Image (tube, rainbow, N blue to C red; front, side, top):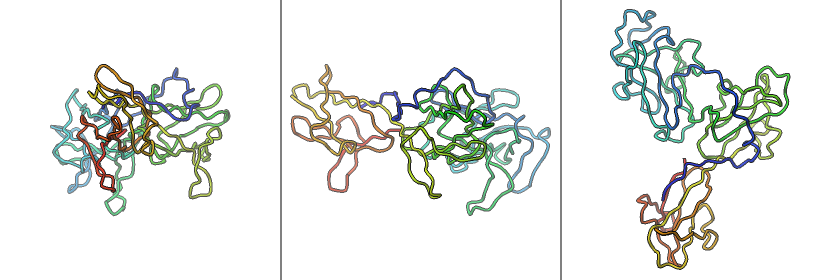
Length: 322
């Protein structure tokens, strides 16, 4: 079975955003390039360094930077792995695949210099977050944050708020960025405000912050009540995937059945091809169990080694949509 890299959003009006405007580039400590996240350390974005045992050092001039490491929640705050490549006199980069990160929506991280000194960000970095101990006590320094949801003009989720022409600022906040109240500033356009993001498949809640006032999306009927007696709007990001069963060319009929269709035995008929059988299907994010029914005989996917028991003694093929 293979996945097709086509993503759609299940609420149709989100697809109407224009993509003709460019966003002001923010300093984040990372950038998104295609399917990669590129961590970027530029010494000019940091005004001091701290160490765990020596306190703070305010002057970078006396520090000979030999190596820089990306250390964060995603790698257990490593001190010796995730080494960055030097690309300039005071600039380092490290490239990783976005898909390599788990389904956590956000991560805190920091740059570790020479295995000892933490780079403390300047105020011009957009995504700083107060650092805390594991017990939640403040440390009086800041970490950087990156989100698996990110702004992208060609992204799969376009949010549009009509009206509010007199507003000075509109922010999009949701479960996809842990309700961050500053990160996703919307762009003012002719008939309202809009922003386009790239978001992993899944179901998400969101709201708009209009000049400090939180509102639901008035044009999205899909919503849930929140803990404040108000409503959060809901979107579902899906991905189109292709199921393939190779061989079995002598079979008269092959059915795809799984947790995504309540294990129906007749709803999803596969199409016969030169190599076997195939079917395109749009699924939500997360884990899905499935099997093929070949002329009334249930089988797991012979080309997919990932299998799980379902709690009833049955073993099923598994894949993750992410």
